[in-house]
Image (tube, rainbow, N blue to C red; front, side, top):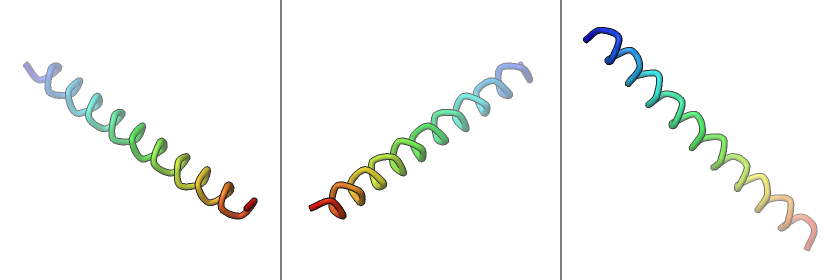
Length: 37
């Protein structure tokens, strides 16, 4: 049972990190394209 909880937490942290990275990448991309205009 303990292992399942650890895996769940790890999964949540990974998906959150991925979402943050995607958000930062989109923000950076939008910023760059805005600068190029």
